[in-house]
Length: 416
Ligand code: HAM
Image (cartoon, rainbow, N blue to C red; front, side):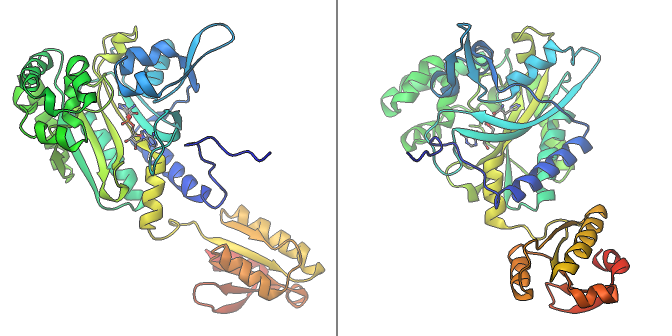
């Protein structure tokens, strides 16, 4: 019997992990530079945490959760997203309060029973941030800037920021009323799902991707026209701050997102290179969620990046270089005596912070050089019996093909 991984749940193989590690290192570096601290929460939570926060009628909760009853007869769910668990953990562990702002980030696996396709999996990874405790528009702008900085550091190009405001508890209800009145006449032209949304959450009709629905919705009343003065001012501040940072944004009036907790700012960072699953990153404000989950009345804002989609872009765009200081050295030991010397040199190269590996099995020089190019080495350090006698190795620059004899104690200097 041969086993296969579950549909939509992929192995990440050794030749793919370097890209992941590169992304993970940049996430830690950039997020921490912006003052965010890492939090790690369990993969399993009580089902109610998600139904309460994301919303019973959303696709995620009604169709996509991995929910089961555990041996203690409790309904538990593999996390489909990380905002609710982070808020739960922040409340439970007193990380938040009116006088302290919690700036948290995370990376890890999420689970949604969706129909798998390119960029859509059942187990996928997100990196995200949640800033809990302030409604300052500076924070909304900061997290968007943070996402952009991460993508810049990784060398990703061609991204667009879409921005919207979904209003607050005081202005949204009247918009929903106006929207329902508009939709009432057009139910026959909408898909079956949108007919159900008309009853449960008419806002979601705005972002239905079906052609006939988007045709109807192109004439729908605009959400931005019905924002209350506070929401309007907040939204204008966020847009202004982003413009001051030279970040171009596009107003997308239909960006309501698929989770119920949003209030005010919503945004997505999208790439046309991702096909139909174009959102690389999505987020927004959720000023009512902390209180809804039993915590103090504190506003919050956050986002999550889909890491598989980021890997797809890295692979498609192949941003140049392995990053500064990330050279790779291959040490070729030819003959038995050379093995020990090569092992010592390998170790000193690694101690100097340079990634290095060696030929362990006594291959010919030709095979060693082939292995070094397959591993994309920057240098090959060649040590045979002659070199041991001279206390010097041949250092071959794999990009130019040039080869020099270098004294053992100078090898690191030469490589660096
Ligand atoms: P989301 O839009 O559901 O938001 O997911 C964020 C990102 O995760 C998406 O833009 C996408 O890149 C990725 N993603 C979602 N589903 C899948 C999937 N099935 N396969 C691959 N990638 C996927 C949230 O999860 C919110 N918690 C974001 C947030 C944080 N809002 C405020 N704070």
